[in-house]
Length: 457
Image (cartoon, rainbow, N blue to C red):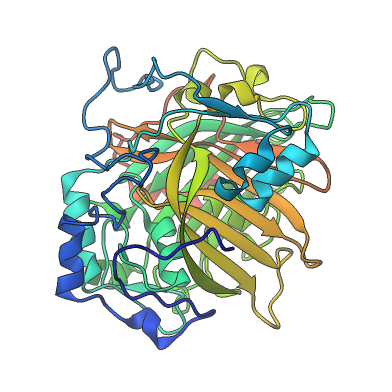
């Protein structure tokens, strides 16, 4: 990976595999001070790149675009931007230094139809001021517990804006700010090779005690809850009524993830300890694992994690056209891959994190390489390898700034299975109501009893 470079700013970086005592280290006050000078509060480089294709960070989107009101699908803040160039199978070799191996493989797999339209880069990620301050506070106190499977002395936003190893970097993705709570109507589809699909409708609710303004690290450690997530299947009829509940913990050694499912046939709630790692995702047709959800989630204990450095990469960004409520799902879901005319790619800097399966551990993925946007800590692309060391799947997150919060988050995650030549798209919301980040959710709604009450035949 000779295109991966270390940061230009002198910061300590552990590039060894696995967990080491350095994972417990805190940065110094002097290092934290760079979060107000050379680095952004989230640890990205403020300056642009040498050739000007990546601009300097100036705070991201800080006001609503004209015509937007809360509750709408988000208006494109850059409607006049034009395509600067297009990558196809014919010219992809010219751009391999800013593409992942998985992205290149998609051109090889679909040479006649796959392409990438490249637009001007906008560093649009932004967050509330209190989140920025919380991250700065976290930077000098947050630690990983012994083994790296839990987090201590952190609250609100990422814990490690200047990461020293791969474990800290992947925890940043898991703990990035996405508001305090959200309810959403969304769905997924796994088109066949011919392009036909069945839409699976999902009602989801997420409450994030970790991100509540004023959250205390001490109180969070006492409750040992990072977030609570509930998912109800609404369609098709044969699946409607089934539901999932997850409690994610801060210290996953003290208390592992807790999960329950409601089965409409049995009409009862039961524990689901297998809702983790490489168990198949909900109604996924075997095209993604549970820990693929949100590009990566859950305990990191089955892998050795290596922080490789940074590189410039072409990634989906500001994908407001793909997010539009003017589209129908059939406009998006094509045979082989989603409609490339709807996707906007930009050049951004990304952290590169490699996860290799530990000896003696089981997972259908032997190696995963995560490319994490420096401005948001959102995993943008992941290349996934099987136990034969062959590229198996490619995950791609299509992001927008939900500027009423504000937060940068995916509007659609797509996992391509290179072996079956199929894909699954998660987060389809074009024909549904927009996410609601304003509803105050009661943690009492996230109990097994509540799951049973909401279940239906």
